[in-house]
Amino acid sequence: MDDARLEAMRAAVRDGDAATAAALAAAVAASGEDPVAAIERGFAAGIRDVGDLWEQGEYFLPELVQGAEAMKAAMAVLAPALARSSAGGASRGRVVIGTVAGDLHDIGKSLVATLLAAHGFEVFDLGSDVPVEAFVAKARETGARLVAASALLTTTMGVQRDLARAVAEAGFDPPVRILVGGAPTSPAWAAEIGAGWAENALRAVAAAEALLE
Amino acid sequence: MSGFLDALAGARPLLLDGGLGSMLIARGLGGGEAPERWVLERGAEVAAVHRAYAEAGADAVQTATFGAHPSRLARAGLAPDPEPIARAAVALARAAGAPFVVGDLGPSGEYLPPVGRADPGELALGFERLAAALAAAGVDALHVETLSDRREALIALAAARRAAPHLPVLVSLTFERRRRGFFTVMGDPLTAALAELAAAGAAAVGANCTLASSDMLDLAREARAALATPLVVQPNAGQPILEAGVTRYAQAPEAFAADLAAIAELGVEAVGGCCGTDPDFIAALRRRLRPLAGSRR
Image (cartoon, rainbow over all chains, first blue to last red; front, top):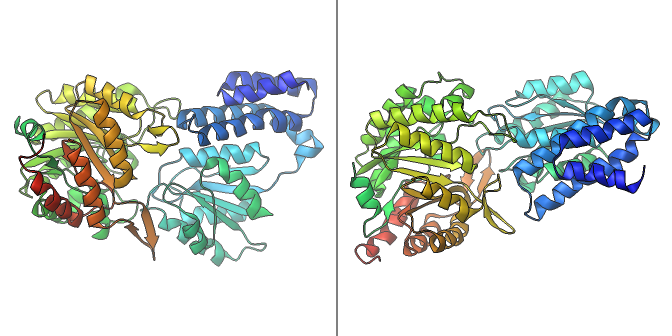
């Protein structure tokens, strides 16, 4: 794969161009080239650019969503090839994700789900307004080792504590880790409830990796 | 009816109320439960909060209809008809005895593309129904607030003006402080977005929620320098902190009131509080604003 093609993949994600990202991914899948290289050096580089541009104050929510959509489009096309390739065959871990009960704000959560999938995690997205018991049941069913829960309201963030308690009480072995995020959350809050914390969607991947180490 | 506009243009800043949702939570409203449910089922609690603001010296109390856009009501599991909620909410606000009652319109809860799939026509229809119901119930003005997308705000403003051509419509967006200045989460820059809303006929434009009072003072300075349209500013009481399962806000009333008095000194026409502020904040602000009477401008 030459640099120009990788750069085009990167640009397609950075510019939020899902159609181009999917077409470039399709070419990779059709040629039998290594999908992992295309993801790591192409599409995922574009998502990192989106993150940098967000941090720099150049990008806002629409650009983040469009970048994630382009990434998702490429990943969907590459999924079969990725499953066949030896490097990509092994999932980096299963994650159950959702917004907590009472909280309907799912934009950030959906971004995190897309980014985790793009980075090789197997993601089970339960959507928004998810009861604590549903998180626990899904973790049990899938054998996930991480449960990620978002709360955008101060009124719903307390549910993250209920979730952490319920997961602890479920007695998973090996233990299931918790990752929390959302506007009102903080490192202190996460520490208080015994969870990991991600400041924003783009930081969530590294936080998930750290928790599953 | 024009009494509200006269007050807005008057020699002293109009004092709005403070947080309502956070006050209802303190009175037992469940996390994630819609305050609109309390309008219908526990009106006395809502009325008590309005009364406390009126007694603290607020010139206007804002109705408990923030989440009464039909789309939002449906998502909260309530019947998607804003009319009975608006009627009850206005009566509860009016009973507080403040000089003015402002009908509150929060975001629809749906997002326009590319972030979501909301249909502009449906958003408009919902805002129009809510605005019409508030107008029919006799509010003195309408306030579209906490919107993070200038396009949705323009839709709401147009809908409110169609539904209630005789009422002044205030529009507040919610801004974040980013490296390059104040922007909505959708990327709308402060002064350009407010200027567009003013040009579309808003009686006042401004900012509420998200920011604490010190950041809001900087925001107000920028907005005042760029705009002659009346401004409305309602910051949060600092940042939320959750302690032992209870949310509280970081700021004390006096520090808030000091910043808000400085915002009023800039010539901002209407000030008040948002999340975490309570009647103590409004009372503290009332004490500081009093000396301004007649001396402003």
